[in-house]
Length: 114
Length: 114
Image 1 (cartoon, rainbow over the protein chains, first blue to last red):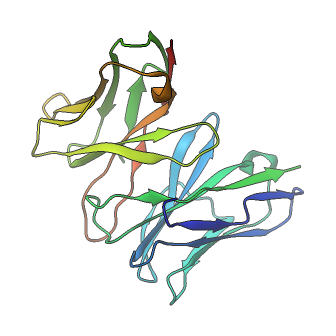
Image 2: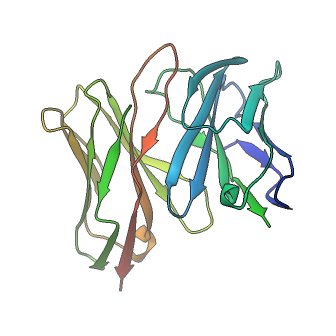
């Protein structure tokens, strides 16, 4: 157990819908990262937040958005869902924003879009 | 942006043999190179990492080497065991106070047969 929690574990929804994935970082970690893992694209970085502020952005679609709240938990919002959005979404956390700090991954949320 | 290439995509070895996985990166500013192991259905977990000011690092049966000039780094696993079977991901990152992201390779599926 990494100390990072994600809910829900599984999510099944239809195309065009909107979902929210939730992540709680390890106690004391200020930085949260979101990754998408699909079979053909591997692990792709989406976005990073540090202490409530967006710090780095990857290939995140405009239909996706995220935020980090004052209690440091983060939510990833996916809207106008398409079949290709089906994937495993991981949240990770680290103590600081710099790369030398280990990123601890949560168990992931498996999203299935039908 | 950074691009990480990883080879081979699959690797099968006999128990007790050594396994080597190689990665190349494109951004000369990258200075942190972690390796993650992901067992089936589980989250990625850090197994070893190396910073750009170090050429080699060992941890029991696992070692990582880095050649900054050639922009490549490798994972070496000696005396492989069946429990080493998993998907291994290399990653590269730039340490920056503005924000940081792990850019992953596509992964190597290692199978160790007894």
